[in-house]
Length: 70
Image (cartoon, rainbow, N blue to C red; front, side, top):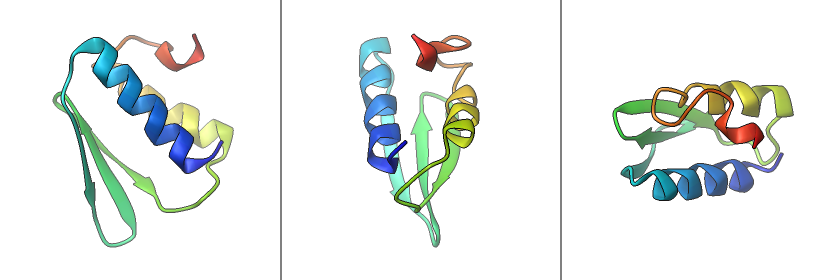
């Protein structure tokens, strides 16, 4: 999955849920904060599907478990 698609999917889900979306740049990663949950995403152009799934699962507290599979 492309990195931009991961970010696009997160932005859309945050907007649909009415949560704040914040993106900030770190040294080698991009920090993403949605609601009260924050995580980092590496700056690779291609993100492995398993890695993308685990990254999405980190935001299950803000959305629901498995939200990205729907």
